[in-house]
Length: 283
Image (cartoon, rainbow, N blue to C red; front, side):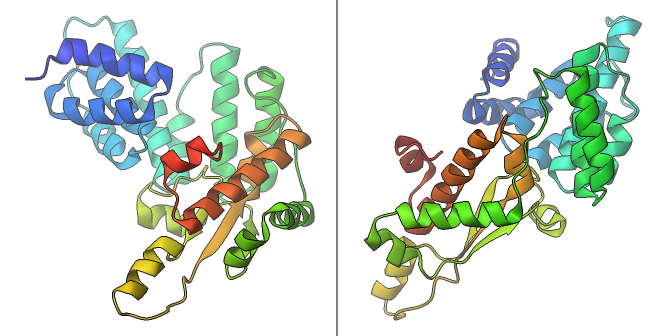
């Protein structure tokens, strides 16, 4: 039996702690047991934190025009509607609709410099995915001006530098590992393709740092044992340069994050799961 009140508090704590797995599990548990606007927004936030933006989107869209609890003050209702628009923008962005996300977040009035900075940064993300790089940069700069600690200036690294760093990382690997990765092309791209984000409905997030595709070596060996014979992996790795730039505060950190991301995606090719890579420091 679900104790909605205590489970809602657990969900709130999980979201605040950034506990992805617990947030998702509790959101799934509570989805059918909430009706109030504040509770529904919290569950949607749990889905967003847990990497299920499509579930969040459905919940948030269901709130549009829905009646609110009579015991809430007008100010509280307005606060919740503003929060709903922010979460809706996040869900739309994560599922491949940056234009819809812009429409939602631009109607939000920020309270204070921190919220204004976050709003500018988010608008920058949307503009970048819409191909408006100059507009995006202007919003990122404004975000840094409003709150440089929360949204510091974004360092940059050229595509050529990124390719050189990838080559350096590969050269540092043991010879046996280099040989197994020789068949895996590594591509440096600015951002994930919007069509891919739309098709996966958020499974590939717009902010993802790297992406492995193909048949990993473990699965290929199972297929070969099953009698199919030796088959190519069709594997490739994509590194998303601008997303990596945004999570770093300086160029040295950026170089380090590119290295970690590349090794993480190599780990997928070797058949390692997320727990394996966390133990190896590649998560």
